[in-house]
Structures are given as C-alpha cells and as structure tokens.
Image (cartoon, rainbow, N blue to C red; front, side, top):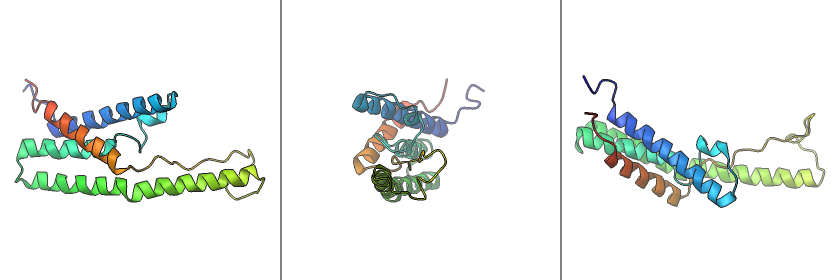
Length: 157
C-alpha cells in the first residue's frame, strides 16, 4: 500500500526533465548574466531536456522490466527518434528562424516594409530560435537522464 501512486518510470522522466530545465536556465544565466524565465520551459539549449526525459525513461524501463522486454525496446526506439529529431529537424528549424530574424532586422533597419513588419504597432514578433540541439547538448541531456534514472529509487518504502 506504500507504493500507491508511485510510478518509477514516470517520476524518473519528470525529475530528469525538470533537472535539465533548471540546469539549462542556470547555464543561460551564467553566459548572459540575465535571467530568462522562458529557459525554464523552453526547448533548445544545454542540456537537452527532451533527451534527458526519454533516456531516463528508457533506463528506468530497462531497470524495471529488463533489457529483453518489449517495453524497454519501445522506449529505446522512442528515445532514438526524439534525439535524432532534436539534432536534425528541430535544430534546422531553429537555424532557419535565426536567419529569417536576421533578414527581418536588416529590412527593418533599412526601412524596407515587409509583410512581417507591416503591423499597426510596427512591433515585429521574432521567430523562436531555440528549438533544437547540437549533438553535445543531446549527449549532455542523455547522460543526465541516465544518471538520474540510476539515482531515483525504484520504490518508496
């Protein structure tokens, strides 16, 4: 009866995601000397919270069900897809957003009107640039998730 409501895999994944977001926010503050609350929930940056979440869930599933279980196999596949996507499609989208924002700034500085900056308030909304991750950021998140999955207790006694 003590373990009612305790899901080791879910708790491990949530703890890993939260830890990665806090570390990401602290590292961003250390680099910029500015607190950005968006870093607490936003994508992109070091370490990858998506990688931490899926890797911790995969390791937790392995510990709970075994390396030869279909549950671990499925979680491992999901982890690989998420990390591949973070380094590929989402990273490319972030780089594209940065390029478009730079082009819009150039147009704005030269007084060239575009559909993007042609609003009543003349306040252009920038595209999000922090979307994906470098391989190093994904590796950092993966290692964090693996470590935390080994540290979070499998049951509460």
